[in-house]
Amino acid sequence: MKSTLVFLTLCLCVLVVPAQAAKYAGEFLEIGVGAHGVGMGGAMTAHTGDASSFYWNPAGMAYVSGLQLNGMYADLWNGLANYSVAGITLPITGAVFSANWVRLGVPDIQRHPNYDDLQFPVVVGNDTAYSVQQYLMLTGAAPQGMFTDNESAIFLTFAKQNAFTLDLGWSYFQVPIEMPIGANLKIINQKLGSSGGSGLGADFGFQLRFPLSEVFYEKWNAKLAYGLNWQDATRTQVSWGEHNKDAFVTNFRHGLALIQTMPGRDNELTLSWDTEKRYDRVNHYGLEYLHHQVIALRGGFWGKDWTAGAGVSFWRATVDYAYYGRELGSTHRLSLNLKLK
Image (cartoon, rainbow, N blue to C red; front, top):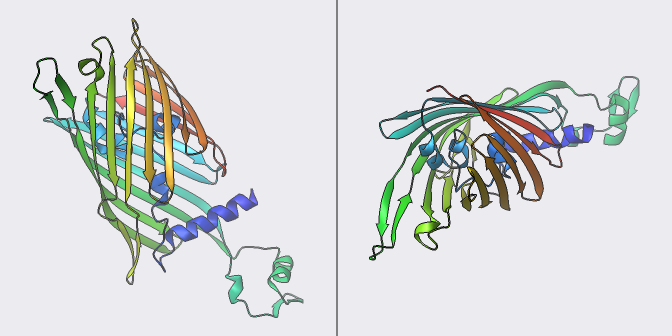
């Protein structure tokens, strides 16, 4: 537990210390949003189409119909941090607008001195320390205080559906195409102890979906989908004042999905794959079985870590659960989507 806390504290210091540009700035936005996507290993770019699409691919928001509210909550890393999401989606005159708030909070982080700056010998009570090891032994490694880390982002999303028929010159090869597009404006706020920073960023995405029955085999009741999400296309920067800035690394995330309707049943099977390289190359794999649009079972791999989840829809609500096992500790996520009209 202590080693995990130390590791997390060091990571947070690397993330948001305003004294220098940090390679992993904005890492809190890599955690994932919504139990649906996390349960499928994060492989969502091509086929996402619910209220969490603002995160996976803003183009997918074009498939949301009606006024909707959504939210998610998770305790991360064995309770060391809390992660929450809340948002509203509203279709207006052929387009879809949404506003979502994402927050990561880490309370009670211990504040320790920079031991490299200590000038030995150091008097500790009635004793004297001649090294860092002796100093830690005499003080019991007691912190000099506590501080908190709060990182949040507001996503303002616009998406629009584009549908047309692709005529390849023969009457048989007229393929109906769905190609939604979308964009995010992100407002970033970060606060570590008494230091705070803010910035603006943007994401752009599109999807392409078409039925395989029109191209290969008329009885093949499936759709093939491709998606691209260009995250932090504007090289998002967080300003901490006094000319100190952290720049987010641009990420190209893209993937494929096969959505197969099961013969003779109102069931769907979705196979999906995503790849991205913000820091290191990460592949995502997902599988979902949807029964009568009511019950969903999911599984996947987020890099080398496996995920699993389930969902149930009733009345106007959809409740999703996801399990995500990681080295820092397994997490359980619960999300809710409510259709108001």
